Amino acid sequence: MPQIDDKLAPIYEEVLRRNAGEAEFHQAVREVLESLGRVVAKRPEYLESSLIERLCEPERQIIFRVPWTDDQNKVHINRGFRVQFSSAMGPYKGGLRFHPSVNVGIIKFLGFEQTFKNALTGLPIGGGKGGSDFDPKGRSEAEVMRFCQSFMSELYRHIGEYTDVPAGDMGVGAREIGYMFGQYKRLTNRYEAGVLTGKGLFYGGSLARKEATGYGNTYFTRAMLQTDGNDFDGKTVVVSGSGNVAIYTIEKVQEFGGKVIACSDSSGYIVDENGLDLELVQQIKEVRRGRISEYARLKGEGSGAYYVKSADGSIWDVPCQVAMPSATQNELTGKDAKTLIKNGVLAVGEGANMPCTPEAIRAFQQAGVKFGPGKAANAGGVATSALEMQQNASRDRWTFEKTETKLADIMRDIHDSCYATAEEYGAPGDYVAGANIAGFIRVAEPMLAFGVI
Ligand code: GLU
Image (cartoon, rainbow, N blue to C red; front, side, top):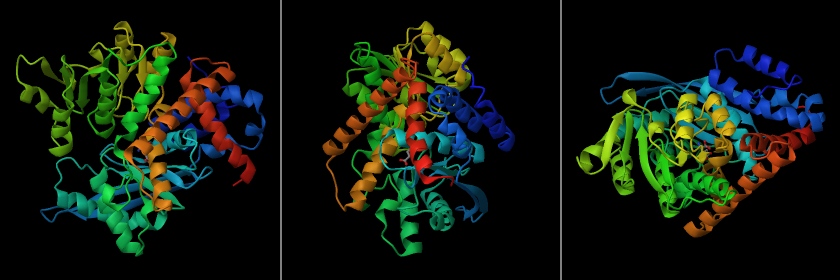
């Protein structure tokens, strides 16, 4: 089991003490600290300046009340969050998650990860994350709009194109960004296009932003496969989730010749032995906002498609050569990893943030499975957000091809720098160490330059 270096252990102890009960935040910090022993051995100045302690403490944490009225005039109170983690590289940048599981520990783990992920993109963006424990499932359009307006009525005073630039995450897509952008514009009397990313194409959004996280993970995972002369061509692939990340992962994998046979939602998973019909998945999830079980029902018996409830099995029981977990944190356990390894998995690319447990990651690495951690593999979404900011700042609009080409180049750079950094620090093939170290150094250098702030 990877250990935290003795010199860094007190930092972790302090994180545990100060952030009691925030298990996901502890997990995210632990993983990074496990990689940094190799760095401080070479560069002791990172220890002397307490830089790592500073990086484990968000620059600012905002928690606020979000009151809203449902269609029956009943008042609901949700909690809103924005954790502004690090502005060493640029304005805080990261998504907003609307999901009932959201609490400050979840937002902190996401903000911490985001800081290193954003640094890996090589673009000038700091790290932050936010959201609410609001559950959009089953809510009407009008309810979602009123919630978003109320949420922005507080958030607007903390953000800005040079301060903090939120975007989407689970439960927040173009519809929610539209309502929030409208409210921000109304409250501030400014058409500040660069204050949010993931906008609609008619008011400053970027082509290829919607596709970017899934496409990016596919480019990254392909680059990992290519280090052994492999590719997606002819491979069987399982992608968990059926949201934005999963859908565009499936699209790109299919374009590269892979056969995606399963995807899921929080209720269960579907398998289609003939390869998923992506248009049908999109129709169910994007257009009707329905449940993935409908896929098997619509395809009918004898079609090769079937549905399994979460209670009756794990999507990772489905044999595949490439696994792309794109649902949520800790969805793929040590037991799932063992099943995947037994079934001959070659590579795992994390589309979601921290979807594999530490036990799963360890199992993959010990078995020689190529493992791309989310902070590298799913960085294409936020990288394309930064490209959206570039277009907004220059009042320009790029073609899909130009934007996707830049995304592909960025993913190649991230892959290569993780790979090279892992080699340089004595952990060849370990993309976790490579991503943590490369991301950390990029954040640490400006922090050293700025002094103790
Ligand atoms: N929520 C996405 C992520 O986890 C995207 C954030 C953004 O575009 O700012 O990276």
